[in-house]
Image (tube, rainbow, N blue to C red):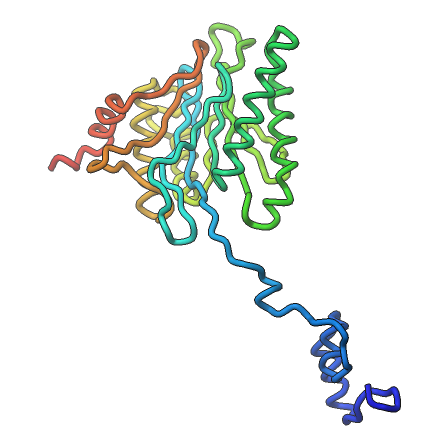
Length: 286
C-alpha cells in the first residue's frame, strides 16, 4: 500500500495480472504490491527443507508353491543413485509360521518388524495361545497406518508383503497365504504371488503368466522349481532396475529366500542357492 492506504497506482491490466499471478497466495500478493511485511517469508530452499538421502530397499517377491509360501528379496539398499549396502536383509522372520518381506525404508521396516514380533510374543505368552490370523493382519495394519505421517513426507514409506502358514488348514490343503499392504494399512490377499519394490514392475507380468499358463504353474512347483524360478525373476529385475541387485558371484552374495510351510519357517542355504543359480543360468558356463 502507499501512504494514503491504497495499493500502488498501476494500470488496471497490470494490477489484475498481479492478482492473477498470485491467486491463492495472499502473502506473495502483498509482497508483489510492495506492502511492508513485518515477517520474513521462508525462502524456497527453506520451504523444501534439507534434502536427506534415506536408504531404501527394493524388490521382494512371494510365491505360493506346492508346500507353502516362498519369500525372497534382493540384498541392495540404495539412497538416490548411491548403493549404500549390498547385504541388506529384506526377508524377516516374525514368528514360527510368518515372514515379513520389506520394500521401502529399512529403518522404519525393521522397527515395524520388531514391534510385530514382540506383539506376537506378548500375546502368546500372556494368553497361552497363538494370535489369530486376523489378529496378526490387523496388528500389522495398525503399525503401517501409524507410520503414515512419515510415508507422506516421502522418507519413511514401507510397503511390505506378509506371508504365513495357516495351521488350521486341512493336511491335504496348502495353508500358505500371501498378503499385500498399502501405505494406509489396508491388506489384500494375493492367492498365488505378490511382489513389490522398484523392480516389481518388470516381473509382475511374468508371475501372472507362470501362475496361469506356465507348463508347471507356481502353485504346483516343488521347492527346487520355485527357488530356480525366483532366482530368475530377481535376476530379470536386476537387469532393468538399478536399485535391485542380482547374484554377486565374486562376493558370493545371494538373495534372501525363506519358506513357510506347516513345519515352520526355513532358510534356503547359500549352498543350495548356488546350486539352483547354476541351474537358473544355464548359459553362464558357456
